[in-house]
Length: 298
Image (tube, rainbow, N blue to C red; front, side, top):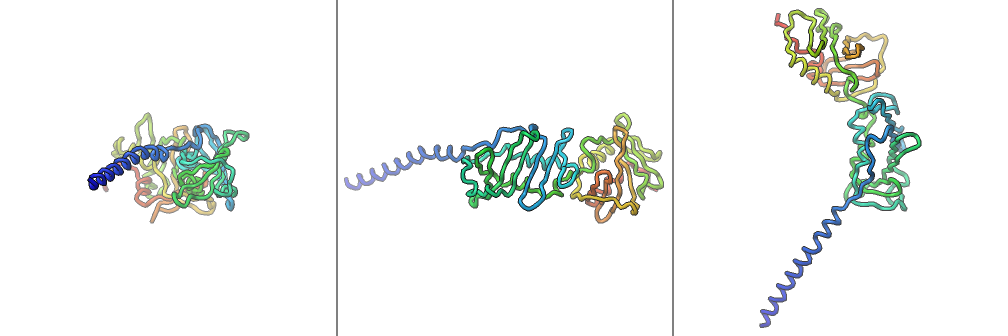
């Protein structure tokens, strides 16, 4: 009898524990899953971005004709995807939302990054980035008198090196390709190669060339419209130096001039009008300067 009583007690304890587990688990999961939105802003709201650091120059972007441009510490086209990653903080979610009453506790009294988004000079939103949570490696930020804990990727995006903020495309998004003049490159000097896009079809200046439209479309698309350099540097033209060069013809009748600084072991192209120098792998660079025009072998 005593053994049966003990057995019943054990079974009761097990069942009670199971019921308690099932009862409490949904609450724990619900609590764990609750998040807070840092903001409800839209990306299109903002026309200027300012990123300030304690010990280096501020980085400033301005939106011009729908595209982001770097305006400080120097002026040039910005990498649009990188700017979008910086702006993405407005859509961040946080497992915590605390009143911003003790900024020193979160390293926000001396923030490592101050990100200001501007609709206009008198309408701004400020995000301060503080210390990291040692357990989760998430970062504390403050915005509108609240403190949030967000993924560290947002702070990393805002801290991107300036060289990586420059657009790595050799052509502007608004520059529509209409042809190429390769006649001043060594391999095409004798033939004076030129290509023109006329009524949607490529015309090649060499009578012996047997190009196919698909091949030329794919070449132009891969090598010039969607290509990205592996790195970009500022470029100051040396007026005493003479480099092989070529021009990209645009749909509006203008041309973009490129200097070929080097072809091996990597292709280096310079764009004097924007003061930029682009670095491409040698194989990609060869394709860029040698369109598939299918000349007969000699």
